[in-house]
Amino acid sequence: MVITDTTTDQIEHGRDRILRVAAELFLTKGYAETSLRTIADAVEMRPASIYHHFDSKDALLTEILDIGMDAVTTAFDAVASETSNTGGRERLEAHVAGHLRALFANHAFTAAHVTVFPFVPADVREASVAQRDAYEAQWSSLLAELAPRLEPDALRLTRLALFGAMNSAVQWFDPSEGSIDELAKNIVSTLWHGLGSIASEGTN
Image (cartoon, rainbow, N blue to C red; front, side, top):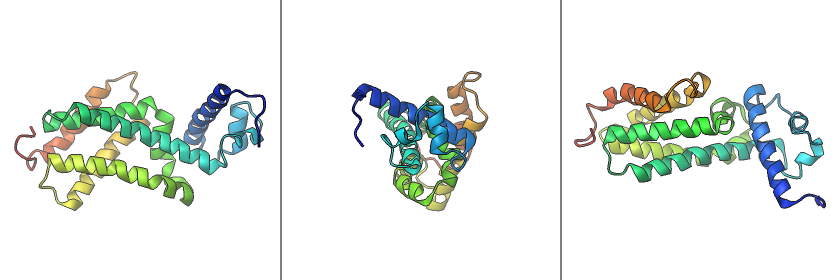
């Protein structure tokens, strides 16, 4: 299908708007309950116009999930480059704060991994799982550095518990009413009392 009277800038703007609005609708209404017609109405387009940008609703959701993962992965990499010479607890606090900032700065895209992903179609799950696994592996490596005596099963449970604490914040924490840095310190403080006894020497 050829677009004859729309500039590249307008196409990109329209595409970005579709992504943003769709992410909000998937988050608030649910994936199954949000049709392409619902999205088209919200962005004031004809439903057929959505197909100028996305092949299907599944393709649209896949890109939304990718954007969310890109945000938290970029945050992790940035923190890693800034904290390589800091103590273990400080490193963990910085990474937790980085994850939380990315979570709230890109709320509809990142929160989709918390509230929408468990209910996505199999093809969307398969398209997203590699990126999610890679991000989880970064955290596993970080925790293994901080507490090298952790057995693999304990390491996995620690990572899951940490992710649960961080990601659930999208459902109850309001960054306009509290400090993300303080939230990160509280999360790490709770976790660190468990890790402290087995953390390697020199990470405190």
